[in-house]
Image (tube, rainbow, N blue to C red; front, side, top):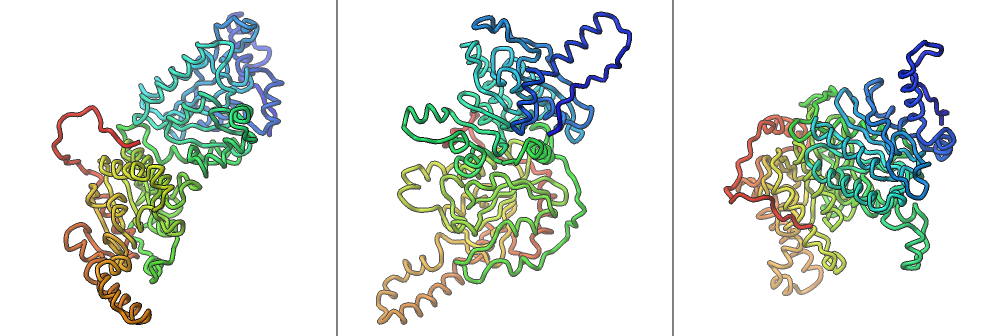
Length: 535
């Protein structure tokens, strides 16, 4: 970690008016936050300071700090003697990749980055600026929580911040980076934002800390076991990305921003990577195993279809039976949603339903076309899933796809059974273009299960296990030929085209570029404020 250097660019010995000299002293003091010792302590923990983080985020020399000289107004409990310019948070605007971004970074060097009245007011003001100019917000969290000395003013401040997060939702992208502690009420601002990045080893999030947990329920756990980056990335699903340090976290923020429009009235930026839109990939023709029970890696399909090296997976370690992320097709940004046959056979469960539905709604809010790769055998059965609301959670996917008005393209690679087929971006939920591979099986259930129900009497009459197996194999083949194949769905118009897997990329590129000018033709409904999505 490099030592902190406070540089202002002022020439030593320069003759200036007293007023200017005073201003320069105040700026120098403000840049020190809680002081050099506190800065050194921050560095010793492997963390950058608030301003160092913002300097990494913004294009060189492009950012302007706001409200640098703000201080708190509290006097209780010795607060009149605890003051620092900025009040523990740095707010700013500047350019990231040449586009406007508003940056907010809590300064742990002053009172642990605790949030009080003026601290919150700065965050609210910066978010209002982002809304007014249509720019994304990046909020770098590093705070001990509410400033206890300011009492209800701190709570009011959190409420104001949450209110702004809600009103900014769906209007401008909101990215939270957890780069230190984030506990109690502080967790709800990141939770209301679009994406959360956590730094492994130095960040954690939880409603109540380990001491309260032990006192309340007797559990022994430390901060990271309770709410560390790995826990939230793999178990709770709260975190979308994990970074090894502050520098990598900032790099992830910049990469994520490169796929997003500045606001909901703009299109995502198109960037060509030189990958031919007509490129075919013969490997895809052999990727799906002949045995329908054998898995394969859907990520390989995705990476072979999209522009080379552009797939950015979101929620990589959470609900791994589903895959979501950003990519490009001929330079155009798309959101990818897919089942993962390599994990739980790609079946949908509670967590996968939440992961998919939230991502689809984000894509729709920000004008990003949805490309779905479907290989889904159904919803996971069992008492755990049913008792914990798989019906309600699964309905979220249906709601999200049906509500979305952006271009929706779907590729059915193999299994497409029952209600899960309908949910995963089918024609029946408004898909604009549906392609299927010859390996696709579209039916109420798998051919074997269907044959055992339809011809149960014939199978029961078999004289031996060998005879039954032979008859079942024949009936399964018959069911596939008559029902469970893509040509039946294509004959009804539910599938637009059956294609060789190798042709998936050029076909999707052509379909996407046709659909970019799509105008949504909605079913006539009475005016409504909004629908009631199952949550």
